[in-house]
Image 1 (cartoon, rainbow, N blue to C red):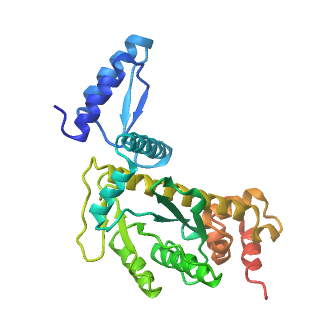
Image 2 (image 1 turned 120 degrees about the vertical axis):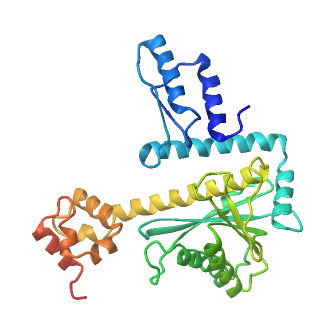
Image 3 (image 1 turned 90 degrees about the vertical axis):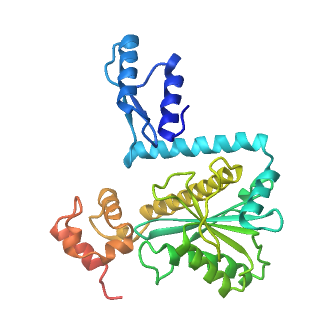
Length: 327
């Protein structure tokens, strides 16, 4: 009987490729039990079928291969969530959430927040909304985070601005603030404390906020949940509520990253670098890649600028001087 994840994966791979062609490379988020023995067996099968010699099994930690594995995990999680939802009605899942988080009734509106940025630039906050009928995409919102006092990569500060950006904007417009029954935050105790402080400042501390943090290996299924006044806890690995929360978090991450890519694309197409003589599309792209944004380029020294591909000393001095012209 297979008990551990590596043993389960080894058994699955053996059964799956029993009557199928084996590819040259198999990617996974863990390594199977007795990996070398499995590779040897697969290589022998490949040689018999098409003359190929080597089959490799890898667990990529970064780069394009790791991105492929992450994408496959997201798709598998969504498919599993749909399958479980078919046999376990949405109402039952929401009941599990109530039990796990101490809610008095099923949440009608769940808001999930995430941030996306590169070195603190082009920061975007995303809000995804879900309810008894699934995702409510008409309620999704994105927020361009412009806080002048934010330091690069300051997720706590970004969260603060997102909260005020949404709730205060609605009040200033004379609109009634639509309040969530449950607010899920991608993060642990620190992020949750920041959100609770913001909610308290706004007089909204009766809204339940829960932090969702991945485990030490950032493995799905090992999430720790943080709530005010309670020690961190985990949900059972096969809990439909856990898969549901993972789907909510993945959707928030997808939405925030999409908004961030759009903003970066707009920044690349139109920014102050277009006004500098000699900075064409190639140099512009290289500068933005190196410093994250036009503001980042403006803060760079001549020494830093000449390190960028395509930027020589005279061009670096021209760029440096452009951002320091008398206003």
